[in-house]
Length: 199
Ligand code: MN3
Image 1 (cartoon, rainbow, N blue to C red):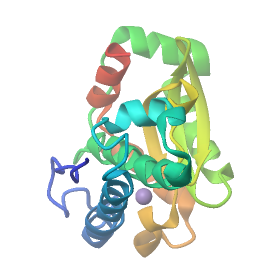
Image 2 (tube, rainbow, N blue to C red):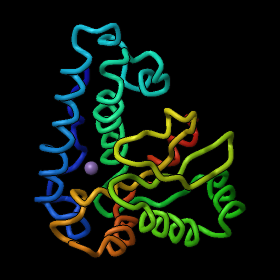
Image 3 (tube, protein in one colour):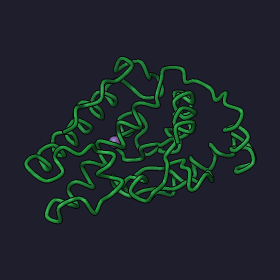
Image 4 (cartoon, protein in one colour):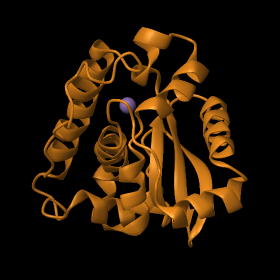
């Protein structure tokens, strides 16, 4: 069973990049609903005592009649935990040289990594996520539909941006690109580094 993640910052602390009302509705309503629905689905089943990461890493463990619901709602919990946990007022820069070198050798530069994440987020048609992942120690940008989670594909996520409209629409409306470009100002790259080191 899952609990709603405790945010490390106040609801208004990510302004002006993400406004208080958006964080409030996104976290306390949408994110919380995934937690409630996920717990309701797994309660009383064979997987009720399994942790969410092991469930999503091995979808074959999910009873067939609740499988798609667990993928949608469990992914909703996991992906939002991952998203909100890597945000911080003012952002934090990357300092790990090994990861900096890997980004430069893969994408050419840190700026180009950002460009490709923005571009990938723009190309994700409909609701989903854009991710920086490790695929067998290689950096890749991938996107997922709905609440699908890259750990179900054996990938190691390092960073994600939620491109569901509920993540940005109150402030940015149709300007998804502006949201994608602005969010880098509040990404905590120390968290991203830690994910890389714990891979
Ligand atoms: Mn969301």
